[in-house]
Amino acid sequence: MELQTNDEDFEEFLTKVDTVGDLVKKLKEASTADEVNSAAHKADAYLKKQQSERTKINSKNNSEGEASTKDVLDNRKESTLLHTMSPEEFMKTVTEDAKKRSAEKRDRKAASDVFKKEANVAFRSGDYVKALLLYNRAIDEVRDSCVLYTNRALTNLHLECYTKVLEDSKSALRINPASIKALVYKARAHRALGQLELAEACTLEAVNLHPHHKAFITHAVLKDLLSPDKMKINDQK
Image (cartoon, rainbow, N blue to C red; front, side, top):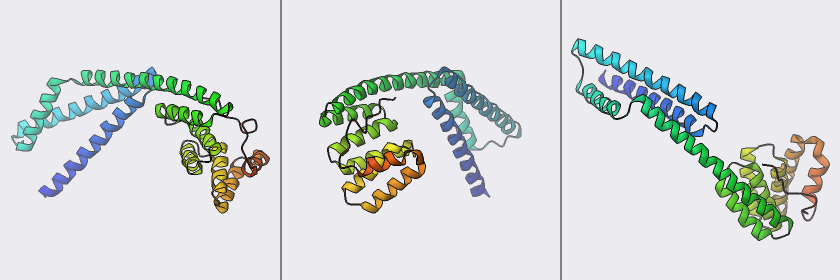
């Protein structure tokens, strides 16, 4: 019976950990003031609810005189934490951290855009090695941009680094499964590696997703060399 109670307590503990983790994650990922305030409000409400429930449990245990040693120790630990940092102070700290992360994200995006623009210039001038290095720097700053991965994939196609093309195409498709450029570049890389069945599968997938661009897709996959004037780098953010 005691084992079952411990299991139930442990499951309840894990549930609370998951809940708090989700709330903190939302705060960290918030990118606007409204999102931060909304996440902070939800987290604050949850903390106050937990504090209220703990107070009720403590009162019941004290009145019945049945508080276990574990309960006493847990209560002391929680009491120490509450004295160290109130829910309001905790929320203030987490909110400030979320705002800081949001500012850092904006700074990384700005830095990435600078590297991307320089890389685009290098690409168009035919300096693919320099373009590759600059796209690497851009991706180091922002790792969730489909455009950056497809730009680097095209650069690697010109450098005949076909395995790298496949890697970047895969990354781009994780972000945007319908990316026409990622599918075309992936097909091109498979074709260059002699993997014709895989190349055909990628081509058909691209055509099925974008039937109105069938001629463009077929031409882009089958042409001997991708040309900057035909397969331009995407300047969109």
